[in-house]
Amino acid sequence: MPPILTNIFGLLLFLLFAVLPAYYTNKYLLKLIRPQESVARFFAHIIIILAVAVVYTSVVIFVLVKFVFEQ
Picture 1 (tube, helix red, strand yellow):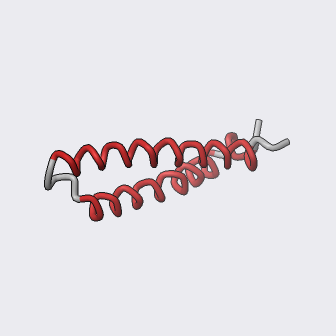
Picture 2 (picture 1 turned 90 degrees about the vertical axis):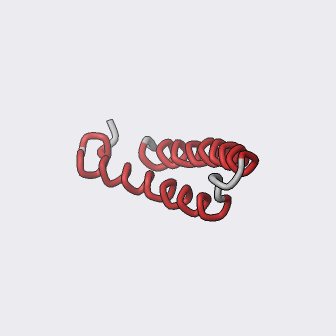
């Protein structure tokens, strides 16, 4: 098993660094798109957030496979 998964501090640190960019990206997109102004902006926000989630999840999984589970 990779050492990062056996060390609780390392795992929490990795999760923190994985979640923070997504949080700030969402805050930026909320300022940029302003989904509360109209239904069209709301649906645009939903579509963009789904696309960002797919890309961001792929990047996090790639980092895990490439650097954490590399043997």
